[in-house]
Length: 213
Image: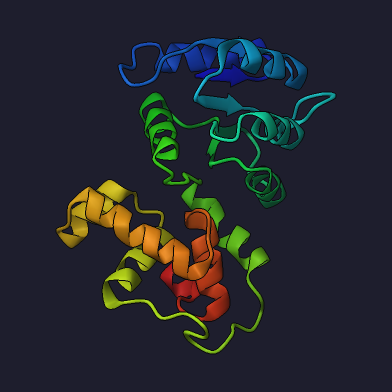
């Protein structure tokens, strides 16, 4: 994992919080977007934890540059900002998740591992505001152009509430691979690349409402 932040304090904090992890391994850090690109060329990490607000090259700009050259890299935003603008900018740049810096060590590790599984971690309290911004004021007729099975609807409502694959498997009495298969089918039907896009599309189609969040 590569940590990108213009301040040494959060870079050190990330190392401290995740240093004992057996599932995540630090390979380096960078203090700017430019340094991050150089580190990518040298270290080629699978996972990047990146600040949003950095001088010269901000998070979205850096994320786009990294993914243009290394498209399989998982990038997760790590920030103090609870602005839906920042979250949308980072997700639109290709980030797989968005984590606030007040997250504790366990929460941070869980979120990073979730991002690696394409679970798209986003702070629960930020979801309603973001979805209200991307969803139209008047949804399309219920189910227009899309037909989901009852099981897919259960899973869709679960991801709308921010549930992980593990939580969905436990709640529905299914194996995790089965959940992943259902998610793949949901994404395909909704033309979505991740959970956030799936929920946004479902809102637009009227398959779910804000009461489901």
